[in-house]
Amino acid sequence: MNTINDRIFGVLMIVLAVAYGWGATQFPEPFGGTEVVGPKTFPYLLAVVLGLSSLYMVVRPDPDNAWPWSRTGVELIIALLVLVLYAALLQPLGFIISTTLAVGTLCWRMGARPLNAFITGALAGVVVFFLFNFALDLSLPLGLLSFLEVG
Image (tube, rainbow, N blue to C red; front, side, top):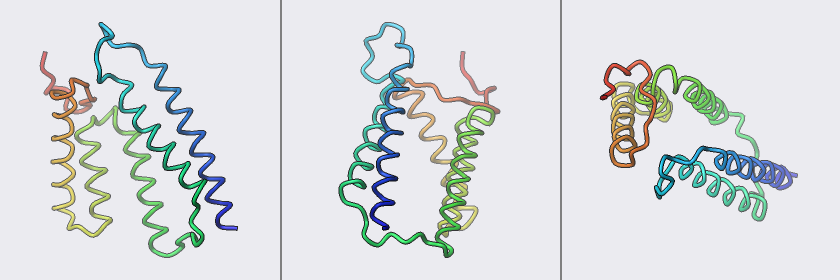
């Protein structure tokens, strides 16, 4: 019975991967249209990874996948809530603050000391922000930190 649950979930995730990939095709072309890395690249990559992972789950389900109703199950629910809040707060708070809060909270829930967890979150937010904005030339929302915007 547990293997059928994995297969059903895998099929649903394949449908989600296809829908996500199709949604990425609806993004407007960047100005000039000759960029190799554009706004569609990351969603395409996520859709492929999700699709392949889901296909693996359909083909080779875990024979013993009882739901962890112990502390692990609670931690998974907390992680899911943190990620939903992260997505909701990304625009209003901005990438750096939202990432600091999300990564910091997840690190803390995994056992890091709170100060170390949130320092890690802040470093991750700043490094990824600069990587996307300056190395990949893809803008991320600044939100509350919009006063730092150049030009």
